[in-house]
Image (cartoon, rainbow, N blue to C red; front, top):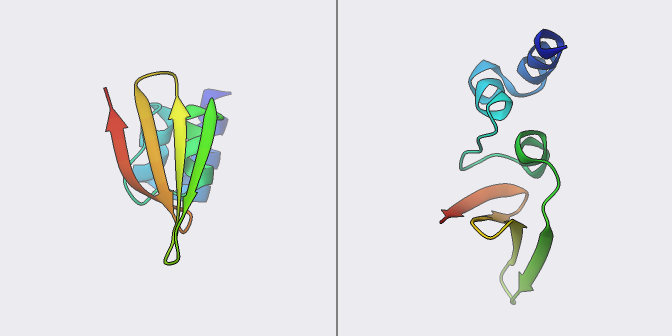
Length: 79
């Protein structure tokens, strides 16, 4: 099963990203789908809008926050 998942992740996201995702890691530039594959569904999603952009914050527990802009991970806060 693990081999099949790795092959699927590699096909979808490339070898480098597949390795990160399989190890539960995310990286700046990841899409929402890539982050969900690595970490699962967030506990909370907060959205902030202004006249220029929309920023989405995904909250995992009390120590991991991911910030998305235009479906790309822009910032990672880990405590």
